[in-house]
Structures are given as structure tokens and as C-alpha cells.
Length: 194
Image (cartoon, rainbow, N blue to C red; front, side, top):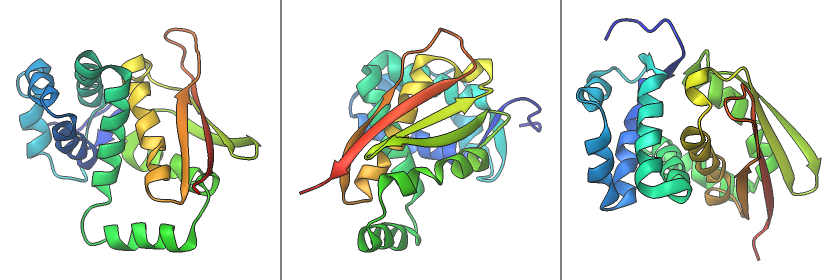
């Protein structure tokens, strides 16, 4: 695939997204059938560090949302990010987070760096902590392709990975927004598990 000049996403993330489709059970084959011919082949053929058009990510997000709704998008986002930890680093990442027990607030501080490592030309995150056990993540300058509910719903699942690798439980919620607005925000509330 030729170099991408517009908004792009690292191919390794798209490969994790493809893998995560299997976590959606029987819906996975219906989701794959919704993808444009050549999408899966382009992702599979790409080098992991290569950047591909973000439209491929959006295409998958829209197919997942169409088949499984917001809850399925959330599960898909969680499975994809967890899969990205696989390999020889997984025991270290999971072990350290469970041993040290960082709060989700601390984990969310790393989200902007992860976003800009994964996405190019796709907006900028800020993280605030309006109160104990509450974090708000705000993205600005979202390109038009990423402004839809299917993609933004999957981000909820990515944020909730914090509860899978820490001693906390909680939920991320996409906050109400104007359609096609170049900003989006998620409110995440959490508490320690008993």
C-alpha cells in the first residue's frame, strides 16, 4: 500500500483489531463479510510499524457496531488492546500493574502517548481528574473519519482495559456530543475492588 498522507493508524493496531473480532463469537464472520473486499488482505500484508489509512479502522468499527451495537464495540476495543499486550511483554505489563497496583488515573495519564504512537493526524488527548475516582479524557482535532459513534464507542473498551490490568473496577462512558463535532470526551469512574 502506498504511504498514507491523511489520518493514519499503525498497522499493528489494525492487526490486533482483526484478531479481536474472534472475541465477538458468531458475529465475527458477519463483521468480516461487511468489510470491503481487500481490507483484510491490506491489513494482513502490512508491516506492523507501517501506517495505513484510518478509514480501515473506521470501516471495522462501523461493521462491529452494526453487528453487535455499543456493547460489542466496547468488548472489541477491550480485546484488541489486551491482545496488543500479548507476547513476551504481557507477563511483565500485567505483573507489574497488579504488583504495584496503579490507579486507573495513573494508567490514563499514559493514554495520550499511546494514542499518538498508534494514530497520526487523529487528534490530541488531554486527561483531567475532576474528582476522586473520576477521570475525563478529551480528544480534540478529531478528523472527520473518527467522529462517528461506532469508533468512539470502541474507545470505551480500550479505556476499560485499565480495569482488567489493575485492582479497580469501573466503566467508561462516551459523553453526549454534537454530531460530527471535532471533539469527544469520555467520563471514567472507578473504585477499588473488594
